[in-house]
Amino acid sequence: MTHLPVATTPAIELDGLTRRYGERAALAKLSLTLETGRSLAVFGPNGAGKSTLLRVLATLLRPHEGSARVLGYSLPRDGWAVRGKLGLLGHDPLLYLDLTARENLRYHARLHRTAPQRVEDLLETVGVHRRADEPLRTLSRGMVQRVAVCRAVLHDPELLLLDEPRSHLDPAAAELVEPLIGRTAKRSNGEPRTRVLASHDPAGGLAEADHALGLRAGSSVFQSAASELDPARIKELYA
Amino acid sequence: MRATVSALVRKDLLLELRARESVPAMCLFSLTTFILFHFGLNRSSLEGDLAAGVLWVTLLFAAILGVNRLFVAEREQGGFDGFLLAPVDRSAMFLAKAAALLSYLAIVELVAVPAFVLLLLGPAPGAGTIATLIGVIALVDLGVAAIGTLASALAIQTRARDLIVPLVALPLLVPATIAATRATAPLLAAHAQGPAGKWLVVLALYDAVFALLAYALFDFLLED
Image 1: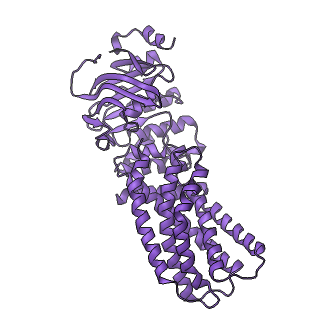
Image 2 (image 1 turned 90 degrees about the vertical axis):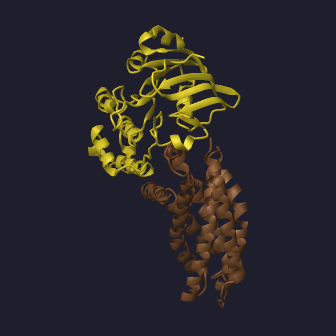
Image 3 (image 1 turned 180 degrees about the vertical axis):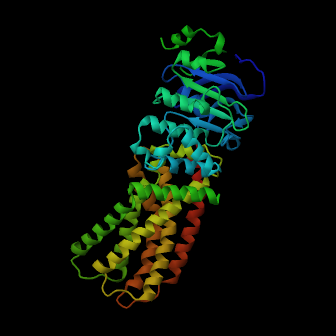
């Protein structure tokens, strides 16, 4: 079992985590530790288990074997306590296409008991405020992704789980969402967010992470400090 | 819990208002079926058991259309995940979906019952009969909303959603249909009488038992 360097209280502790779909193990005996406030980049080809890992951490999938602790809570037993403290930005925006950006975010704000003003602030931050009353169905995929970023950070989560978060975003939009989900993203109390980031971009992923995890067929191939990892090792994952 | 249910219901009604996927189809189905019965039975008017049977079977099949689509947006647009990531009681979704279905049924009945009276009933019923009929309809709707929400949540996890809903919901709704027709038949008789009280009690008990059962089971359907 390889552990990443421990500096502060771990935000994530996995020990022998296994998750199967039928007979196939999407995650096999995965162990890792990530400290609070740090970022982990997860690399791997399609089907390597990146999205499954994020969904297990988000309490949307139950581990089948091993143990998982997120923000100090054991999963799945204490999943209820973790929800609301994490934000998930996956491949699907988790938004209703027949509702407007404002209606979608206000709905999520009500579920998370967040003040409506936070919705307006975020819409302005990501530059969607002028089109906030148009149904999402009529917006481009990039605009919808900006709204999805707002949804993920609406409740000021401690832990951000990001699956290719900049897909569909042009460079200007990527810059707009940087303060919300980027390496410098901070919570409202000034603390840095803990982030787990699934990426296919070796250079980009390493640049915004403290640690890196390589997955292939659900198993850990490498775990290392991002600054010490040779990008060629990431490329080998896809070979 | 109340704030969560209110947010969910509000969202569901807004989605229906925008997409208009359920209520118009349910209304159109009811009207078309009454027209088919009008010509198919070749009778100028119905009464008693037959009238009650035509009314309730039509309304139940119309309800199935709404039940089929109750969780479609949650499944296809990630609504389940968005909801499950929030620190809220999962039962709130059951209550909200049942309330949304109840409001769809009420709107459909506002259209369908007058159409039934015009197309298939003899003389228009008096105010007292209408008030009693509304009471019976409300009792049946509560049961349909509970069973329908449970069946829909179960079916949405499968690929054969459109087949599973009627296969699960209709057998469970047989007792409600029997009680509804027995309670309604005296109201629609040539000389209208009061509803059979025992069938109203049966309906109330049915509602209580199945609402509690559906409420208790719903959380398990949202589990991974």
